Image (cartoon, rainbow, N blue to C red; front, side, top):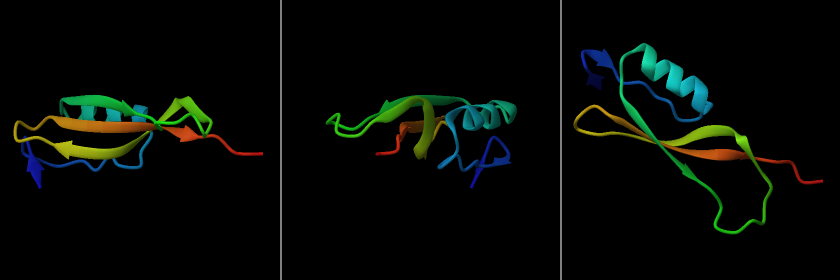
Length: 74
């Protein structure tokens, strides 16, 4: 798949900051939406976000869904 003359970028599984840097360096626009568990059963590390879903719209904008890394249970 090509966008703006370049091959599309797969950001799923990458830390958010890495994904943003990669998209910006290639000139792609993006939006970010944060998702979280509906119940506070698990501890999450909100400062450590990862891309869990990506959709490239017809206009070439990357729509990223990110989630916080889950903390370890003791």
